[in-house]
Length: 176
Image (cartoon, rainbow, N blue to C red; front, side):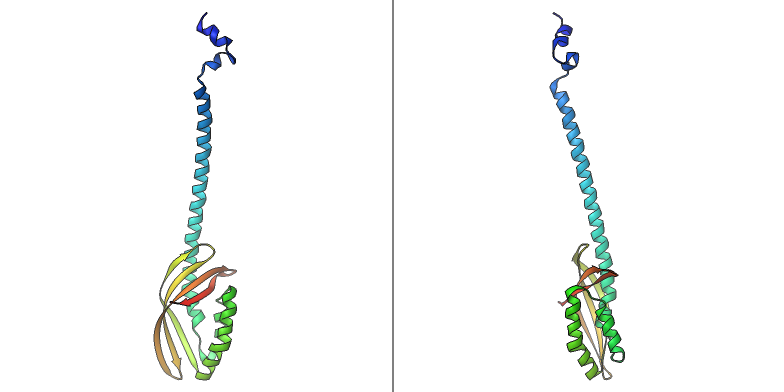
């Protein structure tokens, strides 16, 4: 009996002469292809997330540098408007807490003592953050005028920024 006849009598005919590992190899290759495509998709999503987080940190930093001086500066002659504008820089629970401080402490003291203050950011940097919340360390110089007398002080504050309808707003402020 010839080898050709043996191959033809085998189930599946001559095609069965292909070793079994070759057929399994096709499944393994297909599995590896699917796994590598999945891995590439995962890495692509991670890269997109990292880029979105970096954009958020950059936007929040810029917003903190702009909003913190607006939050902490006011003139005694335009106090009501300035404090309303300061409160507009906040969001979340911090907005309510800061509003209470403005009404209970800042407004009465500023009126009684004719206090004006100007806050300037001298340096700022992101401590940590993602698309939902960014913490920024802000170094400030604050010039306070009380009845014609001026004093200058420096401070550091940790500012928590959160996305809001019109950009990033201050969701927390903690002296450090």
